[in-house]
Image 1 (cartoon, one colour):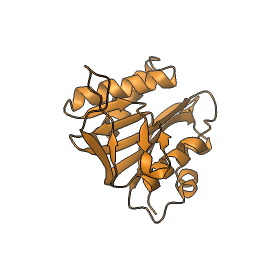
Image 2 (cartoon, rainbow, N blue to C red):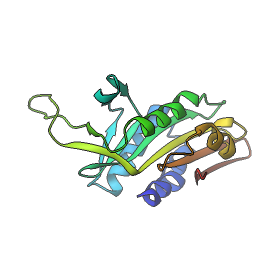
Image 3 (cartoon, rainbow, N blue to C red):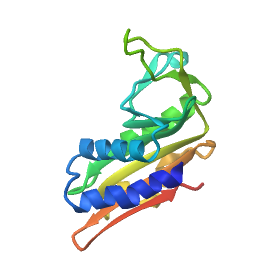
Amino acid sequence: MIEILKNIWSTDIRSRYLEGRITTERGLQSNLYAYIFRRVSEWKVFVEPGLYYPHVANVKYKPDLVICDSKNILAIIEIKFVPHHYPYYKPDINKMIQISKDAPCKEINLEINPNTGKWTTNKHSITEQTNFIFMVVGQADSDACNYEIIRNSLDIKQSENMFWLFYGKIHEDNVDFGTNKLEF
């Protein structure tokens, strides 16, 4: 699963960015959705779904993308796109940390019945195999694109979840799109 996303990021998204066709965070989000759907049509991709946790005082999070199979959440993705400047990333990182801490193995409603607009009985779970991915495009010297700074800001050493940094480092001489697993 992660290899497919790494390939989409480093080839398709990089190419679209270099063509000048990704110019906003929503543009990046919609391109990711389209490429993910084309590559693996059996995955369910939700854009900015509300993740409700009634067991935690009705807490709600809205990640940028959530990728699921038929019953599990495979990836939760947060996106920042500020190629001309330094992305402010801490709220997104904190959101992923909270989701990873609040929701392991809890069932979450993501799908609605199109005839009623109400939640279906099909729920998805965040598991120990769920990937948490921070995708960022920013200036090459920004903290948001720096592996060590992002890894150290997570403060989740007790977590079994897999955290990833997908970066697009922008510099006037070159553009570098890559990925790192955040190891602890």
